[in-house]
Amino acid sequence: TEEVDEKRMSLRELVKEVADMVAQRSAIGSNFGTILVAEGLLSAIPEFRNLISELEAIPMPKPVDKVLAELTMWSQALFQSLPDFIQLQLLLERQSNAALQLSQLETERLLAALVEDELKQRKKAGSFKGSFSPVCQFIGYQARCSMPSDFDMDYAYTLGATATVLASTGKNGYMAVVSDLSQPVSKWRAGGVPFTAMLSVPASNAIGSFRPRPCIFPHRVDLDGEAFKVWCEERALCAASEMYQNPGPIQLSGPSASTVSKTITSKFSYLQELEQLRKHLDDVAARCRPGCDPRTVRVAKQSLATLNSIMDELTGPSDVVEQREGFSGRARALTIAH
Image (cartoon, rainbow, N blue to C red; front, side):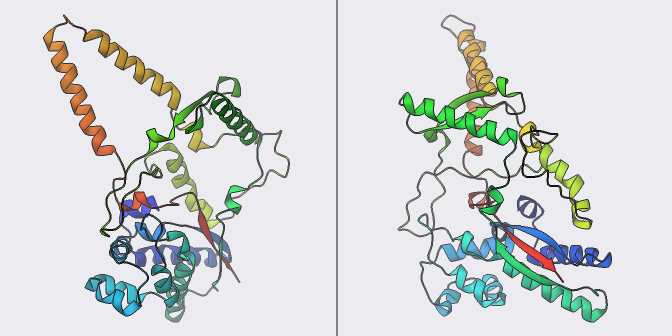
């Protein structure tokens, strides 16, 4: 989804990309496969983003004809071009924060219908000779219940033990965290982070009755991160062949038992970074005691003021897409078979 947003891909371009992949597999006799569709995909597409923004400014529920009258010409055209089931889902009751319920949009069903139309056109033109029979399903919970590895259980035990320590010492409102997960378990660092430190207030909504509430914004996938770069190297092979493996029901020993994902190994040590930051701040405070060189005070003051201005710019989501729920947490599946 983040890549779609970064490249500003239109819905037509996205449909073409999926259709190309289906045709590529069909050419080698693989008329089957699974496509994972992120829950917030539609909010990353520019034309849908505008439509969603306009719809969220309209109090719901409302009949379609009255909604159309309040949309701009471009959003009207997009809304009317959508299948009936998506139109109805876009007009469902809003969430408590007045945002559209993206989890209720059957994005995979919409994508399947559009890809099917595209492949029918290609079949008429003689450029596609395979078959396409999509089966859609929501796998938001199944994706979270894969068989645990040794690492998964160590991590769960550590989080549970940390949460117990926080609760027994009266640290209410704290989230248990474990850092240095790429290291051996004996070198993991556990601690607690207050929820209030992670809260931000979203931008005000156009609906006057809605009052923004503090919330924890979801983190976007880092397109420049090591994990995404590794995926970019592998996804072409995944699209062309069946690249999957199942180590079996018992994952407490063997080569995959203690395997740590690239998403974890490529991240810095959160608690260690905080300690180093605190040390740097202490060093600055020690250098700027009464009686020090005025130039030192001036440089420190201006540098920290600039740093605070930069951090103010980074506070909260950078755009509408980042505020959407379920960017990477939940997905829907589009299964293709004969």
